[in-house]
Image (cartoon, rainbow, N blue to C red; front, side, top):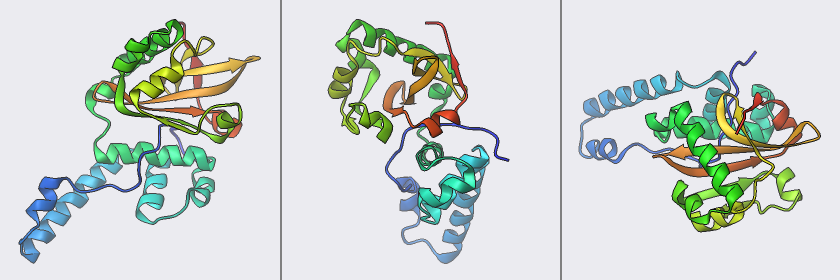
Length: 223
């Protein structure tokens, strides 16, 4: 049985070697390249070992073996949408996007809490300062059906979407990580999952699929 459950937003598929590693292979002999390949392989194994079993499976099967998420989902016991999130989380870890400051749970909570306050107060300027210039807001099909665009890009556009809204959203722990949840009738309806890098919000995923939500560990927190 798979253990941990994590959700985060989708990034473009594919990872690349850092430029300095790629450059060091130019003109190198077979022996040097073999040693370098071993080093990169070991480094990747170390990173993969930090992932949860579900994240590791989703990432390896999709990114390395090009298996579609619809086929991976039954293996990791998730919906295709949740499986995509697992692979995205793993990909960011492998690519080094999850830096140490942004994995600090207290700091994440401060940023998400400040985002919620700025959204409720209609503070467009504050929202923009918290967002990466290339931030992306994504909504799954369930949320799209209730009137949200599938994707919105850019700090001004995303800030404009949230400014003066999210009044009914609550601060929550989503699989142990700070996020937001909107509930109705005592049931969670939409989860707001945040991706942070360099102290900025780089992505927000709106998840409303009931099957996905049922697989999350949600704990509502006081504002």
